[in-house]
Image 1 (cartoon, helix red, strand yellow):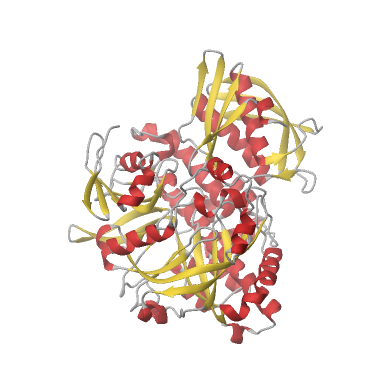
Image 2: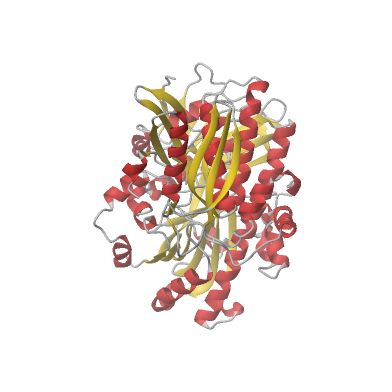
Length: 479
Length: 142
């Protein structure tokens, strides 16, 4: 389908409504970033999403948009309850893939000589890599408890504190989860993967706060320059992949009966209030809860590792959760549309929630500053902490970007990295990396991703979130 | 094993990984697609002996059948830690595939796992007759 892209201002591009589109597309970007996506099909995917029933206002894309399957990655779309849809492809296979950031009382320069030792110990204690099996084996009954309880399951088992839960998006649980809506196959795939990082772009990183942009908010988030932090990026593993897969297949068969004419099979969907739609949301919630438990457990082992290696107690280390965000999710949320408060099914596929100061869903401790927004960089580049904004509520259903976004395919990346020792190049930059996979480092090398600073600048300037601090990696474990 | 033996090519997709597989007939393209996917995930000797396992997959048309067929093999790999070493398709139609698989338990150390495939996607899926046989195009989420 042919479509036009119209520049509205320096940070906004409109795709006017045309053909089967029910709403226009709106892309947050910059001229520099737009130049990167002209060759791929991600803008066509924005257009395809705009054709789905019940979509509200715009089919949205964040500056880190790239070509996904069905929905673009970096896409946000909200649907009405009465005639709108929910789509597993609008969430992605890695349901509740997300990030948590841990702050410490440590000054990075003092720990620097021990980084290698810490990375090696973390690599040993936290299973990572393709097909990694966890240290925890769950019976189906226990797995159902994880699916229903989320991060609090791990806390009940002694792996974390009540305070951790308060500082997790939705307190680390979607209560509408129904373990009965999940297939046996999903339980089979998930039974030995809880407490594993996985592979691909997932990682655990030791970092330092490198620059502060907003002193007041940094104080509110307990961040100071030179501080040591730890970032964990992972999701719901095979459990979530299977749930997405099961419902894509079920909905794919039913869309014809429902009379949808889809431009791409991967856009399979069901009405939010239909039986299938409701069951998908209940099963998706189980995967979201599994992912929160996963990140909670990995954080617990990270704390444990730091205590042992540095021979320091929890009171000295003060390894506190700053926040945990998910960036692949669909949620029923309240938003204002045409001056009326309505419930919408908001899909964020590679997009982070960005709630403004004063919003009731922001933890009390951050209520004045706004929700912490965590944007992981790729291995070897910066990550960012931002704060949610009112502008995001107005324009993007309270959403902002989620990361850098790939620029090179894995094949191109391997070609670019040919003959180079990526781990050595990173070590020269002061970043010690341990990875399991043979080609992971090449595929995930910094050049394979867009410049995250440009992505963050675009959301900051568009007002979708405000920059607070920049984090520089010191040590990374990858799958 | 050399990828050329399997007659598949990796296609470039920014976020994911895809393959184009060719076969002399429709059975052949389904077998080769499964072998290509296994080849991407694990380094193994496909001549290893194993137990037999029958599978039945149903779909709406050849592309849908292909996604469901490969998803079945992926589930065996990821959910039951079973490696498929040989495939015999006894019957195939656009809506139904029956096969006997030779399967063996996936052993760490013995089989080197190369890459995690999260799922077989419907994105731009195609299975079609071409001038010299059959061709399938499949994109995996990795």
